[in-house]
Amino acid sequence: MQKLIIKNARVVLPQGIEKTNLLIQDGKIASIGEVSSGEKRIIDAQGLMVFPGAIDGHVHFREPGPTHKENFKTGSIAAVFGGVTTIFEMPNTWPTTTDFEALEDKRAIASKTSACNYGLFFGATPTNLGEAQKVANVAGLKIFMGCSTGDLLVYKDADLEKIFSEYEGRICTHAEWEPRLNERKKEFAGQDSFDIHSKIRDVQCATEAVRRAGKLAAKYGRHLHILHLSSRAELDVIAEIKETQAYKDSGAKITCEVCPHHLFFSTDDYEKYKGLVKMNPPVRSKDDVQAMWDGLLSGEIDMVATDHAPHTMEEKTQGYWEVPSGVPAVELMLPLLLTAVASGKCTYENVADWVCHHPSQIYGLKNRGTIEIGKAADLVLVDPNKTLDVRNENQKTKCAWTPWNGQTLVGCPVMTIVNGRIVVEDRTLVEEQAGREVTFS
Ligand code: DOR
Ligand code: ZN
Image (cartoon, rainbow, N blue to C red):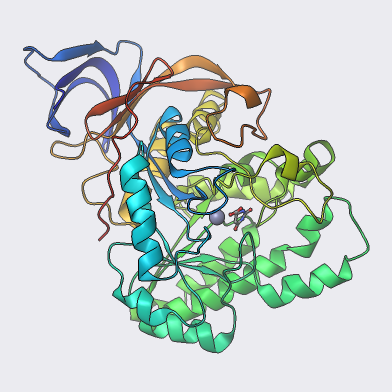
């Protein structure tokens, strides 16, 4: 196993940023501070920063299934180029990850091909609770409360009540309310401009689902993680539920995430980007975009995750009703956030909290997500001043496009280390398969 010394870097430690040295041995962080040299590779990281490898808690890698959009290999390579060392992958593949066999099949694929560490979600259906209770070590039980890509859907009161009353693990919801969005679809049936997307799947669709899931979590004392939250109103609903006696008494916990597209795009962008900014939940008003930044900074929103959802450019440039929802972002999450630091929106410590420390706490990754002695050496070396020209043609995702095409970001991952092994160096892939399945607690 490679031994490495990283010298003279500004290292993002749990207690703050310090100029120090790291010794990496046997895949772990062996010491911090004084490190003796020997016959190890020494990386002089003068001018660079070292973050814990980013954790993207929400990606769709499409395998098995529509692998012409992405597969585990291409998605995980995109991840490591973006400084992401761990991803959690969603169950709306084909077949859906809704039974033991499908989960094991996906595990086999990931174990053979993943460049980064991975965890898998299990998908809820109205009838597979028994199976969900049997499978081990999943990121969480994912409930689509409103339909999206694929056909996973659980929204009936009795089905949701049963899941929350009996499933003891982490429950992660796509919180859009199916009955309302269906009604709204009918109302807008004759129209085809892209901005109707945010009207069909309006804020009330989201708050209705957040309220229902939140109340059930409070009633049964569950850990509920709200995926891709997008509006101020949802934060208000969560705050209300956290004030209830049921929430306080039951030991429930509600956490939430926001995606880069809800931090950087708004309904004003439909005119220019059309189907390229169609995703579920949809982009919101500029006020809501600001509320997402405020929520992150206040701690009301716990983490950032991408909802990396690749579709081909051909699919994304059709008319409104045909365009599938979703945008890729796993390779840009960290550079986008570093750019936000450069423009004064947040700090490097914030970024480490949002994509490293908090995701590891929320998902119970005991040995990843922080730079501490004994933890797995999942690290990303970042040049905070180096620019990254984002172009469709230099994206690593198989779908080969990005809504950030043409932008220049400030802050670039220059080396990614997974389990102590260098996987990307100088924007070149040097190792393809360093990833392992993570352990959830
Ligand atoms: O926009 C989305 N795309 N939202 C989802 O919930 C699913 C995702 C996908 O898989 O394409
Ligand atoms: Zn998703």
